[in-house]
Image (cartoon, rainbow, N blue to C red; front, top):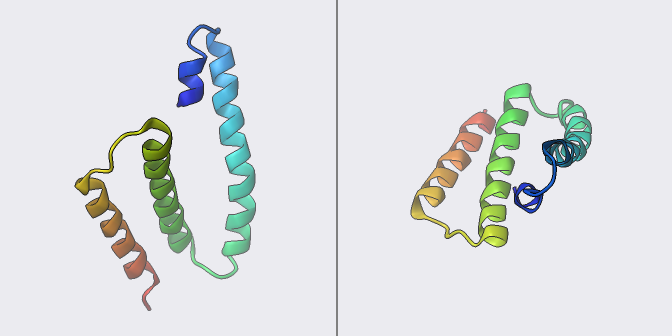
Length: 91
């Protein structure tokens, strides 16, 4: 979101293009990873891994770039998501 804050004096279409460019680059990595991973993991397993990775990355960015504190609630939520990964992969 930092790119949106820095573009507050620019026209809206510039912020839209910046956001969509970031999303496009992420998508270019995610699609091949899902195609490769689908040979090993099921679709629900891939989805729970993606959600866990995205939540961890979001928390890290929030803390490192924006200086927001890590709250105990976030730790508990992360542990619950790790539990979801465990239950998704146990056979």
